[in-house]
Image 1: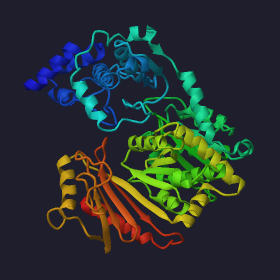
Image 2 (image 1 turned 30 degrees about the vertical axis):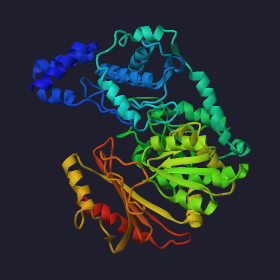
Image 3 (image 1 turned 120 degrees about the horizontal axis):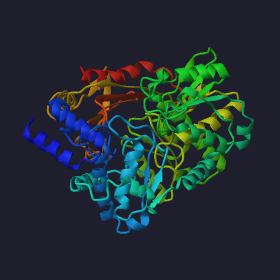
Length: 557
């Protein structure tokens, strides 16, 4: 064992007070398991705009009692620096209260320790249970996830506060403290009051004969979606009983993400066939994403992509806005991440409202939405292709619960016109132009290989040159958000924020195609997104989409 690793382990054993993680580390030392110790202590979890994401376990590389305390102490100090009145403001902490792991960690345990840190500084804590299994995500005072420079500021103060404060381990004392509040009922009431503002067809909902199945995929969404349907006067959806209750082992699915499509929906299909339901709604475990499937006349199921559902919801939200007669469309905005479909742009061009794109991630859309709202603008809708939708500015993030209720109402309304979701999607494409997408990814664990691939694109025929054509189609524009280059701007500088720590290049083609390659911030993936955007009425362009994909495949060989 080298000195740096030995020092990290010794420091850990000195600071950790969790008997389970202490025992695990002591056993690894006793066994001489150097490689396992390197895995646990080789790095410290990096705090970024996505917060902390790591497996539970012992050591600085994992989420556990000590690293949660250290992170929260740093966050607390950063907030004290930013807000002199923090003790009057307080903080909100949410957890999902699911089962403990073998290493002694759980969302509830971590939340209680985080509360202990703040309470030790006299800061009120509003503690929510059964909210989300997302590891450690930070929201700012505006209600949106943090963006730079807050992530760097918090990361710095974490490093300055690694030794636990005297009361940081006092979880029992935190639970008994008068500074610990439970705002669940008030927040629950306010949330459902807010989303009901988007219920415009209550009489239709009451009479609807549409049967819907819902699965929460072993997450927290069941009770919230049932309550949302009740708030909209929709008939309650049939719940997939085997997946209704939270279970961290996700026993009925290989991977608990509805974005994966049919593999996650097997039990939902069976229940829908049994009950005669034509619509399936599926939330991911933390209920911030939503997948939708529809049964076709031939009996087969269509699972809508995130871009297709984004088109449907964007169209619907604008129709509802028009029905309400709420002012000038020039004050209306919709947002989408830059790798998502440009269908909202096409709708905006024809209908006269504004469309903006942001970097990937709802932290960017949420903050931009807040900026627009403060300017007196109306933000109707935002989405990302990874089945994330913001249908109400009451929540400046993706929200699968309100999206589920709104899809329920949209489906019920369309059924009165004898129109299915698939038919309405086709009508949207006919009116605003077909937008066909093909997205996927490659697994790559080697950072050097990833770097070489993207550098090859940046130096294609010489230094600082990009491809000028692909499959016989001319490249009209290149935007590189790693280097900050954008060929469409007079000064060649990108408007969207750039980051040298991640790779992202977008090519726009003369035939209306767009192809983006980027690295994932949380997984060892190189992702590609391709879309072909046609003029209204033009259906004969499918071959062009595959040409858009050639560059994606070619650069990764």
